[in-house]
Length: 57
Image (cartoon, rainbow, N blue to C red):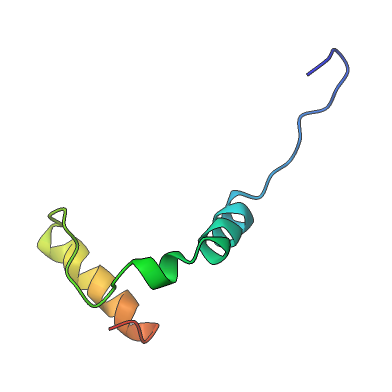
């Protein structure tokens, strides 16, 4: 950036959503399987409820 340039504003959520859609991560990630990394029992329950709400489990 040059002196006097303003910092660009980027919506990270929009950017992540677009990358997810463009590269088809919904086709690569099998949401019906348990995650490889271990989650706490509370986090695992939260993830399961969220995926069920979105009909991904």
